[in-house]
Length: 254
Image (cartoon, rainbow, N blue to C red; front, side):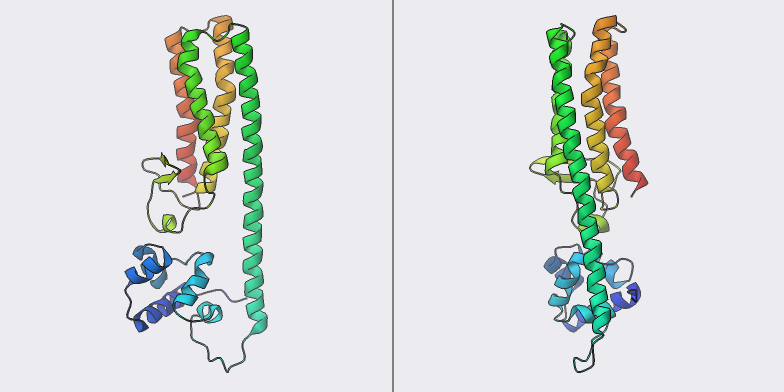
């Protein structure tokens, strides 16, 4: 199967746009992307998401085959049916594999959430029943565990696993959904690192939910530190297990 030449593809898109006397902004608004993304396509610097190929073809009134070959084809000519079938088959196979992969990861995150929730409830119940959870810590640390649990549930059940295409073409450091805004200064979110970030946040918050009660138990049973030191340890643990790993992973896979 022939690969698509980005430069030729971009020049073809530019030619189609100019035939319609449209600006890059006009095309961008119709496709729901940024004009910078359209500019990159036309200059051969990037390629549209596969889900945008059909809308692009429809917008310019051409076939997917013409879009793939980056040239208009005389419909009286014999089309390469086998080649077209191969393209469609490979695209469908890739899409199915991506969906299966995402479904598996989603299942793992669901299991992680349920296991973490059960362990946390068991630990806190044990601490309270055996007077290992002083009232001062109960007031300060328990809310933090609930926040961590809510963060875990948000990334497990509500966050979309695929970002809109404009994240890949612009430097955007925040994600917002259902009124919750997730922001990491200095880190550009895109579809290369988003799945890794979701996994990292889920694993990190789950570890905090499970390990924080253990630290509280050790403190209450053996009085290893004073309460202010313990507060500092738990706060530092939250930063080092959630914030820093998320930032590092996001940078690694940017």
